[in-house]
Amino acid sequence: DQQVKQNSPSLSVQEGRISILNCDYTNSMFDYFLWYKKYPAEGPTFLISISSIKDKNEDGRFTVFLNKSAKHLSLHIVPSQPGDSAVYFCAARATAAGNKLTFGGGTRVLVKP
Amino acid sequence: DVKVTQSSRYLVKRTGEKVFLECVQDMDHENMFWYRQDPGLGLRLIYFSYDVKMKEKGDIPEGYSVSREKKERFSLILESASTNQTSMYLCASSLIHLRGNQPQHFGDGTRLSIL
Image 1 (cartoon, rainbow over the protein chains, first blue to last red):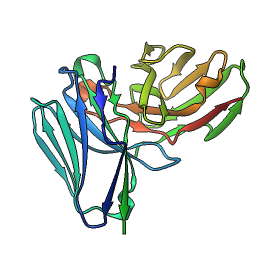
Image 2: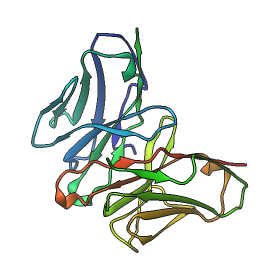
Image 3: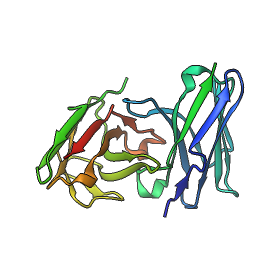
Image 4: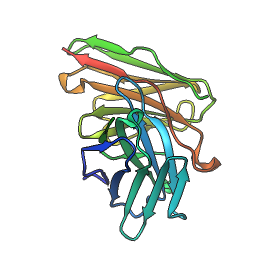
């Protein structure tokens, strides 16, 4: 049973437009959420995170929104750039369980010039 | 910058072999993790360790074991490799969560093929 789901396996967007990536979770104990970006043949790199006490966190072109009642988070990338083409993983943690992360299946983003 | 180094980028082994994957981090992190990544399944946690000589099972520990004799090094062992263990293996490390929200930092992965 997947506790973290990314229902869109892929997303194609025009350069300069907004990319919106979605993630749903089922475990109400999750209280810290992260997004990672992964290029082929490289390890995932940390992008942005949000604690459950917030509903929005922004870092440059990247904004993460958290809707706890819906158990849903999203990552917005504005404006999208060709270098953003990668696989994006959503991850969640329950602090009571230590620093274990549960990952979604990933969304492959392609930004077209 | 945190550096997590995995000893091999690509590895080919035979069914039944004992396989060792090594990972070293240089940031004095307490926590270390081993994941495998398969298409559509994301990253799945195999084992993790909070400290030297400590280990905890993750979500898919069957067929694997780990060793953490030194703080900076975490080894994943495939006791008797099987073809369904062909995958991308990723090592990660982090500070202990009690120091606040700390992201995990990943190595570049080892692509392991079992023939």
